[in-house]
Image (tube, rainbow, N blue to C red; front, top):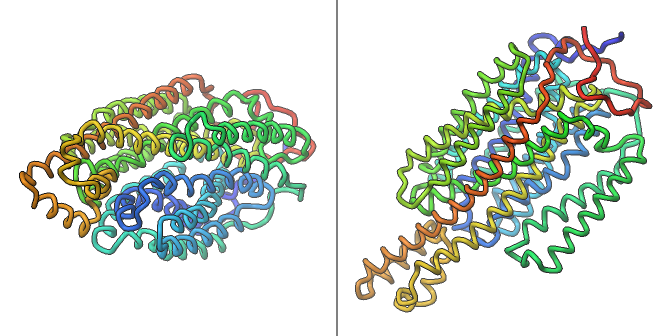
Length: 547
């Protein structure tokens, strides 16, 4: 049988490590942006306003990154990863600079959408490149480095984002991406091969466009439902129906095209299907909810942005430790199922603990809770890309890797949108119950409106003037205390609802993980690509054998 050598065998030791380092830097850029933005969000809202647009700050980025991932994964399989990875980093850097200069929330959201295109190109290419560089038996050893890089970004991101926000302004959290990206581009350009991995073929751009439109309509329905439109409104129903119709057209297109963006026969593979269900529910519950933890700490507990980052830091330490240990265990044992199941179980425990948040909880309790969550992250995240890469033929490496990221992103966007709607609506409802009519009448409509936004106290000058106004009233100190307590408790109650939903999603992820089939990570060489005409489904686990 003919074999192709993995890239690790064709590169010198120096170039191999330089390539690994540059890929990790690329991953670090994308991951750092997500963590620092969540910490700085309250200050961004305080500066630019637009609390009602809160979920769009996250979903605009994730929406565009989600729809670009499948196309880049397929194109990378066909034409190589180099141009897409370098182009993604460049686009990410330029849009980061634009985000740092955004004059209002609307423009920031638009620039975040462009930034998401670059981020999607980066994530779709980095993990697929890992599959190109190493054989499955080797990947477990190195995947910990990549997850560790993601963890390092998560580790320094909240604290760094909080520090920069407190001392230099939130705009610095975007501008820092520019010099980091400049480090990665030259190394990738020098060491990552740019040749296509196979013969030229027709790319299904029609299918990619239909999938992107179906995804956008579907995600917009969840972003707007309960906020801009009622759940049962014609607009939301129309978006869901349009998404369903386009999904049907996408299936027809994929069945007829010789080079589909997402080969549908891969879903006949149980491991491929179940692993994507795991990452979808994982993204829905865990990533969707965790974005709002920093907002809770800064508004309900009245902590600074720096303190908020420090509270979340132990979660990243847990991810870093578990991902490195888990990667080494994977490379030695060659089995992934029970590590994934145990990681999902830890996530369930962590999400349950976060349902206990209240307005009086000590911040160190939250740090303990998120350590448990981080340990679960570290065991699950490194395995998911390995699972799908190991379960499909080699020629579908990029498609399989990008599909895993696509479904996780889909879940995350839906989760962020749903939880953002829950947060704003639950906060308003809880505040109405606790901010009494007498107190509203005493402070007047202007002060009442101010407290309807939980980030109001972060606008320091405006809030200081409001405090003076309330304190000047009869019994003003007690009145201010009651209003602030009402706001903090309302925020805590809304956050509890978010993590209750996250807890339920984590249980679903655990249940799906139990159905994973444990295919050994035993390949030692990379296979030769299958002929272009060979598009028949492969039986579960019946991937090419290797010497």
